[in-house]
Image 1: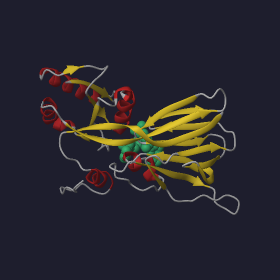
Image 2: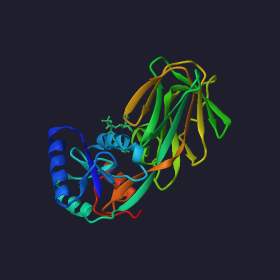
Image 3: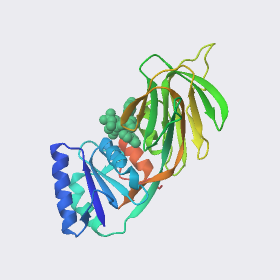
Image 4: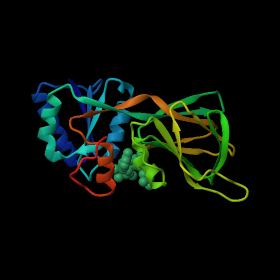
Length: 271
Ligand code: NAD
């Protein structure tokens, strides 16, 4: 089996990375940063997002796993003290794979018909640095509302515990192929009106945002922000691609939610 490791880059993560790499090579696994079967992130959730985007070209054949070197991560759920156990588990292939849905974002430009396609593991957040964003929101080709406010966050089920949660969105189990739209400070008065609640769209229900006021948009996909001008539309839907997590032991989603946000507990909540 071929593996790669993505480190957060701090001293501790780099040290754990080199120990892990050496142990796996001792077990005759092959270190391959081009087409790995398994990508191990060593750091936090931010490092996991970085690893996901680095290997986005080989999602079909690559599985991901995270070791956290800081506080408990949502994606990075192995601790450095478990390294030996993890190495032995990895050496005993094949591992179990759990697939989670991703978000597809297509940004179309007014000029030249160019388009940018991106995949998000957590979310896409659309804001502007100049005033409010004003969009016509279409769902499945029908006008739904005109949104005016700070912005919109469109998240995946596994990203529903991240920015989406801070915006008052619901937590969605990743076995549901869906995306969620959450508002950032919408303006609601006698002139402007939005639904005001998070919206959960199933697979095949495309959401199209059409800017009414020409702004430059700050579009953040997971941890990476880019500025877009001349935007004709931003299309969001459940992607056909999925992310594959390597599972060496059960760690049900609701346990992760509880351990991250409520309190650690020894009991296991079934998937
Ligand atoms: P960061 O260093 O600002 O970390 C943000 C926090 O989000 C970290 O504590 C991380 O552990 C946590 N996180 C990331 N993905 C998560 C998930 N799926 N479920 C639960 N918690 C999660 O930024 P970063 O490490 O580069 O991560 C980028 C992510 O930060 C974005 O994808 C976004 O979801 C999140 N974010 C959150 C807020 C907020 O909560 N107000 C604001 C901006 C961005």
